[in-house]
Image (tube, rainbow over all chains, first blue to last red):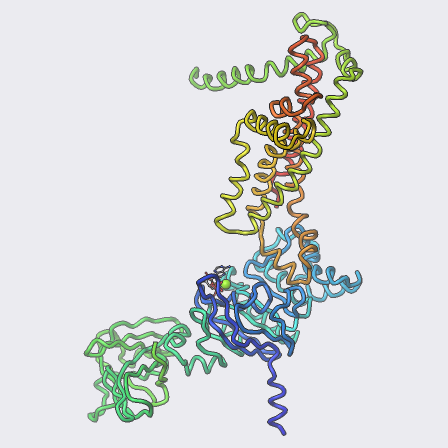
Length: 361
Length: 257
Ligand SMILES: Nc1ncnc2c1ncn2[C@@H]1O[C@H](COP(=O)(O)OP(=O)(O)OP(=O)(O)O)[C@@H](O)[C@H]1O
Ligand SMILES: [Mg+2]
């Protein structure tokens, strides 16, 4: 019973089935499946040219998919023109109407929908308040700063109360401080409007600070979908582990359930025989000076500190093992009493579950 | 010191040489004497009165307007549409396509005129006259329209079109409410330029007008027969029209925002 209810709730608001996009001979998007639930904040993360904008434009209706179908709220919208879709978009370059004031820009959609003048006035004021631009309603667009323009673009889309709000790197043009302020605003607006947001970015920090659902893309494919912390802790592929945060890559071979890493350590791990790749997050690595070692051998690696960078909120240490294998270690609070310094011999190890096996690159 | 004066002097002399005859034409158009020579007589509008009363002048003016107006209209529609479409493609084909459209500017007007005469008289077996002149004028004014509109489109943000569609506007609504308001000034300016060019054009007009006259062929005919000072009045009228049209056009097409 409760299972059925939960399944009902999980019925996605947006569903892409085997959607792909080709431009001539080039494939911008390989067939992908994606489901977005109501009220979620989904971030699409990937390097430049991986197909993020293409994906968003397919959802908004600016391009038709080469294959597959798109469903919004249970309705097939694959062939629907953009003006008929229950989505609205905040464009990468904002796309504000330069011949209109802030209020006219924000009210454009409602004017087209032939709403009454009083309703338009009311909702424009309400939406401008939401993005904190009340005082600028009468200003021409050219007289706004980048951050203000971005909020106008956001207001212009939000006023339509879209089932899904699509945002294509809306913060990319802003400086760090403004970007962080806007991230906070976006989170607040997402909560206040109870909306469903799909947000494209190539900034992993932004994706992590905003999203409750992360889609990592590479070369027109979805590499992994999941909660941000899960994607971080358990990356499925080498690409994800490298793109999302710092990582150590450990290669080795498995023979009848025992893995031997090229860097030394052996441990039990079930799976098919052959070459294996593991990733290890730098902050999960433990490190101590080698003279503190108990005489019995440990499961880790001994090596020399090659570099030690203080980062303000921690330290990043590069350790080189005898055969040239390098390992990056991150310590949250370097204590100088630890005796860690370049040239020191150290032992590093990690908890069993810190290693994550990833698919072949 | 003297070196610094050389260039200003050269420029002044050059300007006087270029503008002198123009100024004389304007000045003599208000001269009451029969002869176009010094000393001048009194200030009068005599030649203007004589012109306005002249049936041949009226017919020529009517012809010129009946050619310039449709020319401006047609070449603005086709030239603006072409420039807009090529800009919308946003591909490497846009510029070559625009250049092909501009080719008539490179052709000698004489060649265009002969080609039109051959086309109308020999092949289509149509009489020469206003339609033939309009064809020729559209051919040579359209590239200017396309160039003016293309220059405006170069700074046009095409994202606004998608934004408008996204907010519920149809293609047509997007054109009327978003595209047109932004490029309207450039289009009006381009139309005025086309109008002024057509009004002034002589070679194509003289070959293809057939029986009648346009303003420019009327002046030419007058010069051949008499050196009547009313020529100065016509020239001044045409100068005033062309200059003011061009000034308005320049103001309108100057990029704003
Ligand atoms: N109209 C088009 N014609 C041809 N190729 C295109 C077109 N639009 C996109 N592409 C190609 O599709 C691929 C994906 O492009 P897309 O714009 O989706 O990338 P993106 O992930 O948004 O990149 P960025 O982070 O730089 O914005 C790119 O290789 C791009 O060159
Ligand atoms: Mg993009």
